[in-house]
Length: 310
Ligand code: CP
Image 1 (cartoon, rainbow, N blue to C red):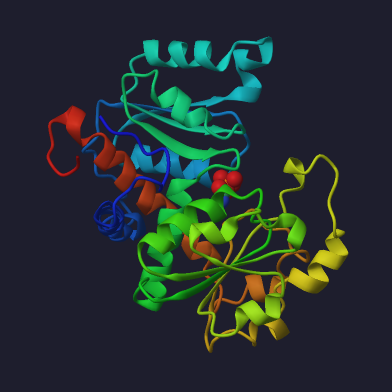
Image 2 (image 1 turned 120 degrees about the vertical axis):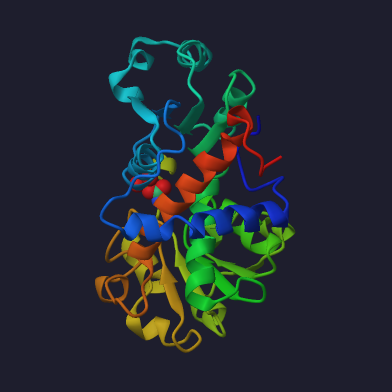
């Protein structure tokens, strides 16, 4: 079996394949009856060691729409709180014979570690600052549907790039598919050698916006900053908040995206976030269910004896 621990290592055709598979689930998700039980009889464990709304619920809904028995392990209510180690927890989950495990963890690389220890495919639902591959896939699907292409599209990712697994996975995916990716942040929130990832780095948001077709805003991840954050949230909003005036500096009809959850009034104003013409934020959530259905279906194919993935 194969895992999905990150975008790194995926070939362009594999990314395109997953996006095409996801596209096929959109109509079912919009129908009244939303079941295609091709994964009936399989068991999916969602092990979440960090909080989530979108990723956890969409993975749960995706698994259920495909007919799987889906169970959620929330670390806060589990024996992790009694001191059980990650590896012991992993062995415990594996002994229950799941067919797929979805993991979110606050430590970068934790998901890769677990993937080596279990007998089924593992999907990364976000690990520390490392990767959030299904987020990048759902973002790419959203861009592809709204703009019509990814190759050559100018995408500016603004905000807390340093702490963001969403930024990292998006930089990898969009770069692989030929987008022009710019990142913009205060110097304190730009990774030191980010340009080695093939992006253009800016500290001036207004300059970065020129010609931008997709503005992807990131949440300030105060929980990863140990209480030390320069500039203050108010200064941050002044220089890096997406307002209607600032959006006017981007290309005509530029698309606004945010992975959520948002800090309204800090990285994005409500009038921009809620603009149904320009903002794709709720569409991103919708695409998340389709992308996760595709990933669950495709990654369990080899154990079901179905062709169509390595
Ligand atoms: N975008 C995202 O990962 O949101 P959650 O933390 O709510 O899952």
